[in-house]
Length: 374
Ligand SMILES: Cc1cc2nc3c(=O)[nH]c(=O)nc-3n(C[C@H](O)[C@H](O)[C@H](O)COP(=O)(O)OP(=O)(O)OC[C@H]3O[C@@H](n4cnc5c(N)ncnc54)[C@H](O)[C@@H]3O)c2cc1C
Image 1 (cartoon, rainbow, N blue to C red):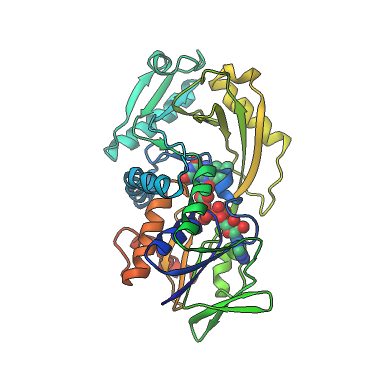
Image 2: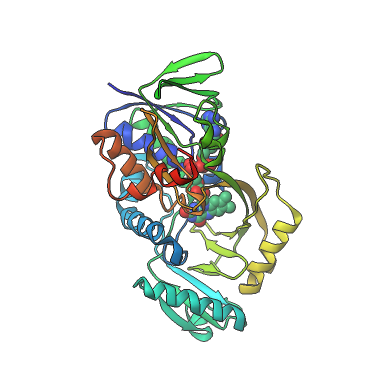
């Protein structure tokens, strides 16, 4: 039986571990801290391929839509196996404009969405307030993306941890992988300090910290960079103030079934720094309050910051590498929760069959070859 080691216990590493363990593989997952406390803990959990569509990212949009389509089955299986409700909601997204400039910007976004044939609707400010009465009177227009979804990323991480172990996966927390061993272009195992652990297959799902994993080809240091995100949790009154996810120009608001309201997120190039800052928190609250003035009295119940793993083209790096036995699953940037089902299913199928599916083919590391990175 092939021994598989996974480096990194975020949603991606845990999800791949769960899928492979269910297929009967012997999987050991090493996490340097506590599982799920990297980017996956910060995620707002929006599954918004429609709202976040971009013209220059057609392949990524396709991957996001594919993953979104797989979500109902993913949630059903995960909740059944873990017995944890991950707060899967199908309420859609409202992207709102607060002035003429925003409206022009939003109009442009709407035309792009339509050019991809996405099921979205243009609303006036009043129509938007009919859907969400607490929106500011300043809202002049909105795009309704009714099929966007959401989950609670923290609950999903917890559920994946339970499901992975129930399926027979071995979890090692507080255990940093200090080096990946590669000999003659072939993976032989990993090092935990001076201890060598042999493996036929190593899957690196180390998120924004991929560049710090020792032993990988030198050029992999430049594949992924950390992009900081600060995020807040407010506590709504007894009645939820909104039911849709709201995308305002300077912040988004994500209501949860437990009454919390997530406000996110900054996007900062600050290296590996994860401090919360007064400016970051201020800007998020200002951006959220402009769209939804009713948040003013809500208590702040949570703050967190982490690092999104960003590749040069904002798309994940998935699949085989020129090193035998080395698979990468990293670089999910702002869409890692959305892309978890498709990533984990397809990497597990790759291990099982040895065949790279058409779905993940465009995301292989070889696309960076012209930059001499593989
Ligand atoms: C503020 C914020 C909001 C976001 N909102 C959304 C959203 O709404 N929707 C969405 O789809 N995505 C969102 N994202 C993006 C999403 O969170 C990430 O894309 C996703 O969590 C990446 O998962 P991962 O498992 O690759 O990384 P991580 O969750 O960061 O996991 C990587 C793990 O690897 C471990 N590790 C690193 N090096 C080693 C080593 N040497 N040995 C052992 N372990 C190691 C780390 O400790 C970490 O736990 C958001 C991100 C942020 C920061």
